Image (tube, rainbow over all chains, first blue to last red; front, top):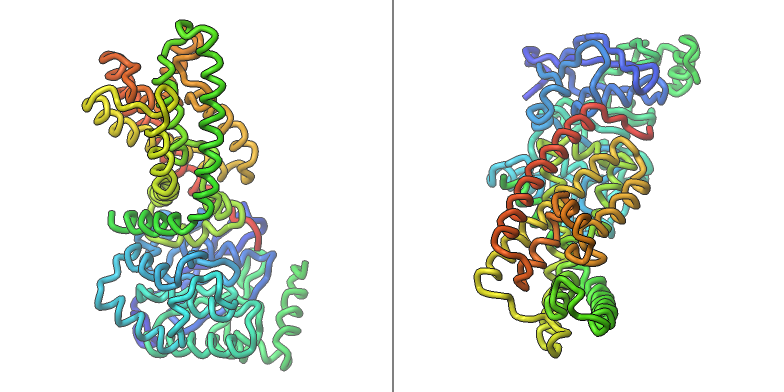
Length: 250
Length: 267
C-alpha cells in the first residue's frame, strides 16, 4: 500500500501527445503522493496519459511508461489488477441488472476472496450510502447515485492506485460533495494513490495535493495549489493563462 | 475460468429476462416455418423424386432450424459489444484482468443460448404434434440423435467463433454496418439458412460443404433425420472441429492485433 511515508514504490509515468496517434513519452518520476491531479486539456494528451498509464489501453509510439514498476501495455492483465478506474462519462455497471450483480461479477473477475469482498462491500456501502441502491437495476439510478456505485465498483478489489476520469462531471451539488469527501477519505484511510483528471477546478482545490499540468508534450507545471494561486485567486484564469503563454490555448 | 463462467451466467440470466421478446420471436418463427413448409410442399408436389431429401426430412430440418434459430442466426449479434467498440465503453473492459476475446465469446454464447432456451421448447412441442410429413419427425436413430446433439453444440460454437471475427473486425472499421450486412447475408445463404445445402447443384454443394459456413447449422440438422451417411458424417464432424480451431485462432490473433492498436474515440 502506498502511503505518504513509504517512498519505496514510486509511480512513474508521464506522457504527452500532439495528436492521438503520436504519443510521445518522457520518463518522469512521480514520487508517491496522496492525490495528484491533472487539469483537463483536450489537446495535450491528458487522455493519452491516462489511457497509457492506467490500463495499457494505448501503446506509446516511443518512450516508456512505468506505473508502480510495471509497463502497462506489455503487462496489461497483471497491471490492471492493481488499479481501479472510473470514467465519468461511461458506465461499468450492467444496465439491466441490479447493481449488486455487477459487483458479484467484478468479484469473480478480480478473484477477490470472500472475506475481503464482504469487508470492502460493507465499508463502501456504509461510506457511499449505497444501501437500497444495490438492489435496483442500474438503469433506474440517477447520475449521482450511479456515480457512487461506479466508485464503489472500482474499489472492491482494494486497488493501490485509483484513476478517476472526471468523476464529478454533471453531478448535482450534494453528490459532488459526497464524492469528493469519499475520495479524500479513501486516500487517508487506505493510502490509495488517486490520479484525478478533471476540468472542475473545485475538485482540484478540494482534493489535490499535487498538480501536474501537461501541454503539447511537456509538463508545464508540477506543483501544488499554492503554485497556481501565485498567479491570482482564480484557478481557471491562471491555468488558461499558463496554456496561453505556451501557445497551446487551442 | 470462473470469471468467464460468471460472465456467461450473468449474460444468460439477463437474456432470460426478455420474455415478451421471446414470445414475439416464437410467433415469427411459427409464421416463417409454416410459410417455408408450404413452399416446399408445393415443390415436392410437382416432383418429389427430384429432391435429395424426403419431404418429411426437409420439414424436420426446417422446424429444428426455426427452434434453434437463436443459436445459428448470424444477424442475432450482441449489440452491446458493437456499442462498446463504437462509443469507447471498451476502455472499461480493457481495464479488467480478463482476455477480451474469451469474455466476449462467453457473452455472445450466453446471449444466444438464453434466447434459444426461451424459444425452442414451444416450437419443438408444436412441431412434434403436427401431422406427418409436415411436422418434426422422430430422429433417424438414437445414435443419430446423440450425434445431432454433439454437432448442434459444435455448430453453435463455430457460429459464435465466426461472429467473433465480425466483432473484432469492427475495431478496424469502427462502424459494423457494412460488415454485418455483408457477412450476415453471405452466412445465411452459404450455411443453408435459406435453403438446405443438399438442394444446391452438386458441384456447388461439394464446394460449399468445405466452407466454415457448412460447419454451422447444416451438419446437425441433416444428421437428425439421417440424410447423411457414415463417411459423410465423419467428414462433416472433422470439418467442424477444423473450422472451430481455425476460426477461433484467427479471431484471437486479430483481436490481439486490434487491442494493440486501439485508438480511443472521443475526449
